[in-house]
Length: 212
Image (cartoon, rainbow, N blue to C red; front, side):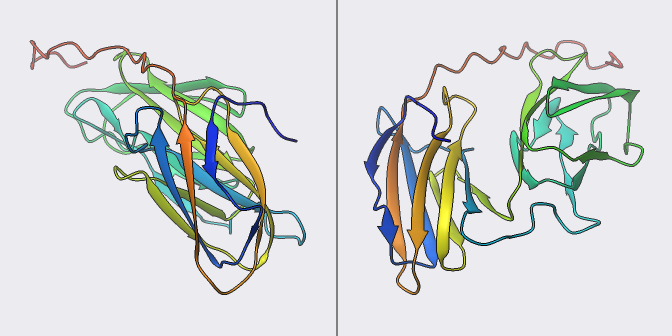
């Protein structure tokens, strides 16, 4: 299924000669787009939709922020949420793909949270309103997140793929179908029309003795 979206595709060949698929993402002002998740889901051959047993990831709480801001995982991954601050945090999500709650705690969590359904999960702290992060749970082993330079590269077997790009400020995911034919690397460039960043501003820390 293709979604209507506010992203403008600059260059993308529908048939590619590549095993390395490199994407360069910029916004409507020409600035690189970080924290975008690029995923490829195989359409012409079965691939494991669920991560191997025991697959884990980590989102820490440091300096009253979630680190990292965006995390991409495969379905079946367990995420741990260690609190490395001197204050307590209350981590929760009301997202359809995963509802959970970790009441006020310090140090390590108790066993982590298993993400067993695909979708985007927004996590927050019930104590610190500005703390927010995103988990993109994918039914494919082929995904990568762009860095500050807006670049991402995926190495995949030859085949026909559903490409999807997600970013917190993108109105809807950008989707495309591509065919990867070994062995010449191919580059794609996309311009994403991003919404304003409406995250709650962080207030100054005026009370270091406050346990919360």
